[in-house]
Length: 435
Ligand SMILES: *Cc1c(COP(=O)(O)O)cnc(C)c1O
Image 1 (spheres, rainbow, N blue to C red):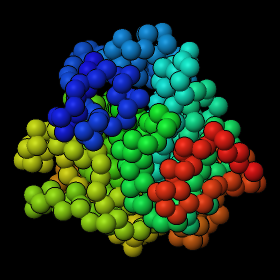
Image 2: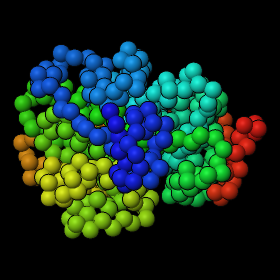
Image 3: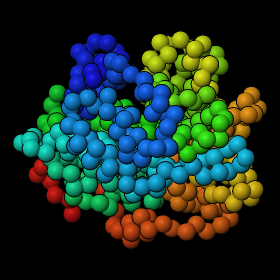
C-alpha cells in the first residue's frame, strides 16, 4: 500500500515511511492510494470472528508487506488487550466504551499500535527516533504509556501548563525512562505550533516523528472500534448511526473509512463542543476556523480540526455527498452538563463530558431518523475529568486501579516558554539528565 500527500507535492511513500515521517515533506497528510472493500460474507458474519481477527482483516491492506503478517498479528494482539463493550443507555441508544485501556481514553489503541509499529521498524537499527507530540489532554498519556520502554524511541511531550486535568498531567509526567514532558507556558495551540516548527527546522539533530492523530498508524487502527461495535449490535436489524465526540476529527474519519471498507453505517454525527468550525461549515459551506475555546470537554478544544481534510478527500471535496452521510452538531458546556445529569438520573450511567456531547448528537439526529440504533463513543473514563464529573453529578467516583497507581507518583516536567528552548532541549537532550 502506498500513501500520497494530500497537498500532492511530495512523492508517494510506503506504510513504513508514512509512519516514520508522520507528515509529508510538503506538509500534507498522508492518505492511502487505494481502499479495497472487505468481503461481504466477512461483514455479515462478524460475530464469528474475534476482535483480533477482525482488526487484522481491517488493517492488513493498509500495512501491506511492510510488516510480516505474523508480526502484525502480534502487534494487534498486544494493542487490543482490553474490552470494547457497547453498553445500553436507552431503547435505541448505546455507548461504545473505549476507555478500558491503560490510560482510560480511546487514544490508547492508536498510540499502542503506532508504538509497536515503530518498535518493529527500529528494533535492529542503529538509529534512534524521537517522537515529538503536542497534547491537549489525552494524547500525551496514551503516547507516554504506549511508548514506555520501547527501545530506540525517545518521546518528548509538550503540554500546556495548567490546561490539562491533574490525572492527565500525572499520566504524562510520572513515567520517566524514555518519556520526557515539556510543560509549556501557553495554550495547546502554542504547543502544536512549536511541534510544527520543529518538524520544519533543518537544524534539529534527532530524527523526529509525530505521534499526533495525523499519523496513519494512530489514525487507521481507530477503524477497529466501528467494527467491534457493529459486531455487538447488528443482530438488532436496525440501521446504525454513530455519534463521535470530535476534536481533530481523526476518530470519526476512521469511521468513514470503516464504511468505505463495507461496514453498513447509515450516518455519522460529529458531535463537538462549542468549537463548532465543522458544523458551521456544513451549514453554510464556508470553512472559517476559529481559535480554540476552552470547554469542559477539553480533549475536543480544537478550532481547526487537522483530519477534516481526509474526510473531504473521501468525498472528493463534494459537500453535498458528504452531507448525505455526515452531520455535525455543536453543544455548549451548559448543554453538556445537563446531558450528564440527565443520563445519570434517568439511566444511572456516568458519562464523561465528551461522551455526553456524543449522546447529545444522538438526540439531535434522532428527530430525523427515529428508527435507527444510535451508538455514541464514550471516549474517556469519567474519572479523567474527576472534578467536573463529581461536581456535576454530586457523587463520588470510584477510582480505577490504573489511575490509583499513578496518583502518588511525583510529577517531573521541564518548563519551557519559547521555541528556542524546545530546540535547545532536543539538540542537547542526550546530554541532559532529568533530576
Ligand atoms: C482526543 C479525544 C477526542 C477527540 O478525538 P479526535 O479523533 O481528535 O476527533 C474526544 N474525546 C476524548 C476523550 C479524547 O481524548
